[in-house]
Amino acid sequence: MSEPLEGMTVVEMTIAVQGPAAALYLRDMGAQVIKVEPPLGDGSRYGRGRFNDTPEGTMGAQFVAANRGKRSVCIDLTTDLGMRALHALLAKADVFLTNYREPALQKMGLGYEALHAQYPQLVYASVNGFGPKGPDADKAMLDGAAVARGGLAGMTGPADHPPSLPGAIIADTAGAMQLALATMTALLARERFGGGQRVQTSALGTQLWLQQWELTQVAMTGAPIARSGSHHPNLKGPYGIYRTADSGAIMLAQTMDSDAWDAFCTFADVPELAFDARLQTAGQRLGEGMTEADSVEIRASLEAAFAQKTTAQWSEFLHTQPEIIWEKVRSLAEVLEDEQNLVNNYLTDVQVSGVGAIKTVGNVVHLSDTPGSVKGDPPELGEANQDVLSSLGYTDAQIDEMTSRATTVREEAFALLLGAQADEP
Image 1 (tube, rainbow, N blue to C red):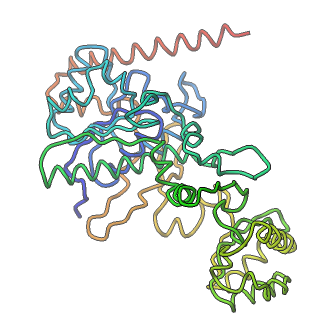
Image 2 (image 1 turned 135 degrees about the vertical axis):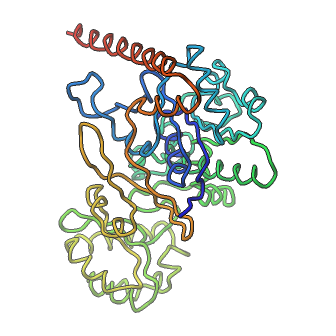
């Protein structure tokens, strides 16, 4: 069965998550993705991996998650031979995808203008922290900086505590989704109108996309939205997360009809809420017309009620109520075993050298007629040097020279690192 991007080639020069995860989506949809890595590899390749008998240890989970199924070509782009090999790849590619910072790309002669002049059909897809223009266009970014700049951290956490970071790298992964979407759009435009073009997005821009409702609410009303801990800052009333008697938690989103609300209030032993004039419609139960004082009072009643029963008791009751939107708050370990994730093939198994078989997130987009698929394990550094470079016409001697150069640089760097660690008191 054909896949949507079958026959297309993506040359990827990326680090960390925002770039690699975008290329991962293209790989799942059928493109060949060649990850061009420097002698030391993607900076996340060994980050927080397990140590073993090699200086670098095993691959880190961040690298494994964002790079499965790709091919790794390890070359030193500071050499003429290495740079010529990269250009040989670009000459046959459909997409050049990168999250390197613009000054570094320009220094290497890999800016958009230079590559577009040489390869006019190439889609040049780039992503950074804070957008392609303005005083901070070249500013370094990690996920937390983007969620702080974009306002999401300010909306996260209890009102009487400092702002909090979300429990996942939202800026990086959402930026990757936007970059993948933008790249697919540019490929469609090339097919319809001809010619490659530059694709740009950022972690900051993606934070705004994720908060369209909240930002528009502030713009329209002129009133600030305050963070609200376990509740949504832009919703009053019951909507939120509640602790149970055994220290678990239940997320109560909405009770859609009156019969379900009556049943809930009976089970929770809060009959007064069943008759509360502030909670008689579905809209009211999402906070319509409710003051902040009303919301605080109602939530306090529900917090006390949820704390009287265990998570299992609440789950058993709520499963009988299809008109109540709710979920048990799951740990990440529970998510990895959730039947709903398994039956939808949202998770997949990969082999990691030195670790064995582990679960990671798979292809979560399903197309009925041209589905993508998981393509395999995360690549060892430089595993595709021989296959990929020989297909470009390089001789064994030239490939050996490029591989040897990268290996020498890597070994020297690790030797220096180990020496520095040995000198530490």
